[in-house]
Length: 102
Image (cartoon, rainbow, N blue to C red; front, side, top):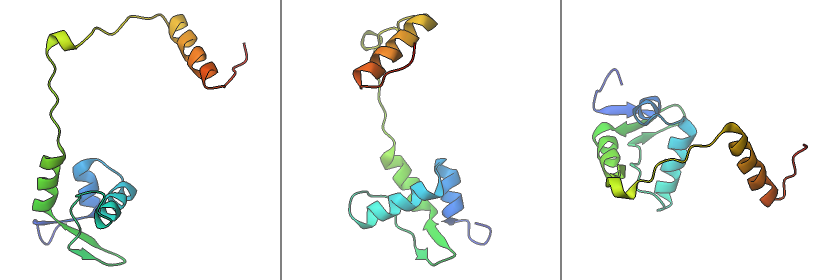
């Protein structure tokens, strides 16, 4: 925000996380319902939603999950040809009951 660097508006929060406005609004709604712990806005009006920047940064730190793998846990990606990939997709769709024309 231009006037107060300690506050972020909805657009700023979207840019910070790289998410859409509807996703941020959904996270706030879930937080109000007790489903999520996303920070609630300080001010909410028809035209403006303001969040405390420190709350947003703290939540991002809580939300970040570090996953570490050892080389023995990671298997190489099998190499497939385009024909094999198409066959796998076709079999998967047929298993779901979707039939494709030949």
